[in-house]
Image 1 (cartoon, rainbow, N blue to C red):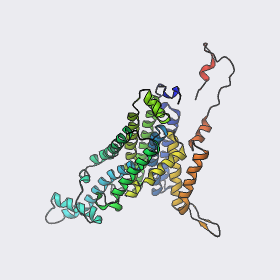
Image 2 (tube, rainbow, N blue to C red):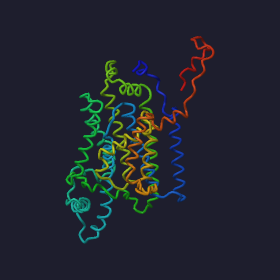
Image 3 (tube, rainbow, N blue to C red):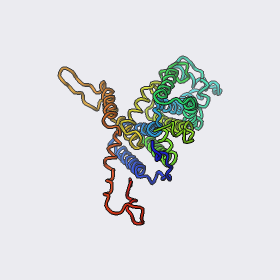
Image 4 (cartoon, rainbow, N blue to C red):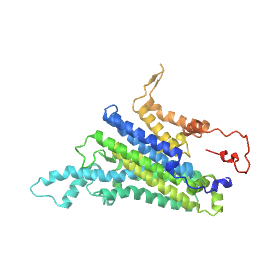
Length: 414
């Protein structure tokens, strides 16, 4: 790491950064085109939901790029925060939807039900699948949309704060930190698989696509609303992270990534910067999960398994680590390609003695792609953008000295 690594340049507003402006403009045009095509019936409601979910995954990938590509923390647990955000909003969706189904039937009885009887009836509907009717303590705010939306932020944020504080203050780094984040994710997934976890075990939360209060609205309208919500969240998240990685904050984060010991020697409290990046990205990832699962319609503990976080790291690597737009491109590219291969869109290849079925071979193809990118194209897909936008260095002709009128200002222009 050179002394320039810790230089503190003046902060350039994200809206004036070329890559940020291009990304936001492209996202806006994409959202408008999808809306027009959906309203004209050119693309299906299910595909609109797929695109909306893809935007949520892009937001999670951008957050992952900040913590890994810029700060150097290879977290293999960020999809746990994604799932926790989904569980938090899913609890309210299941409670409100079940209440809307149960309450009219009980109200039609000769004797109106008491609040406790209504609560028991709702509990029986939700937890009957695991042989229970009692609401666990973690459901105490499930009847309040506002409080559950607060849980979307607080639960991933507090978990990341506690885990990060314990790990960073112990100065755990490198592969050991990655193993710890993976262990955290595995422990959480195994706990949620239990029926007594309070979240219906392996059954998870289902029916999340049915939004309370909008029972009469067509799914086509709801899917477009969530698609736009996902697009706005991605735009705001991108702006936030573009601001974070610019100026002094971005310089210190990159310096921590390149040479943590030297940054600490220069007087920076490294643990605080790492904890800030870890918690902030966990919160944003939780928000992405809260938007994703109402479009998916169901969430279960398998969504939090460590393999999901590994996929997230693969998306960032393929897109281009250390480039916010690269992470988004990688997530969109791999996610849509995965849907095409595993959804039956890719035709099987008959080799005579063997038939290649892409539903079976997709993960192998993804793994080989990750290895190929790591070995031959470490800049990922984002590296192609660099090749297309790279400006030629000015030819060294004329006076490049310190005198007024010299061409030194042309040096290093990006």
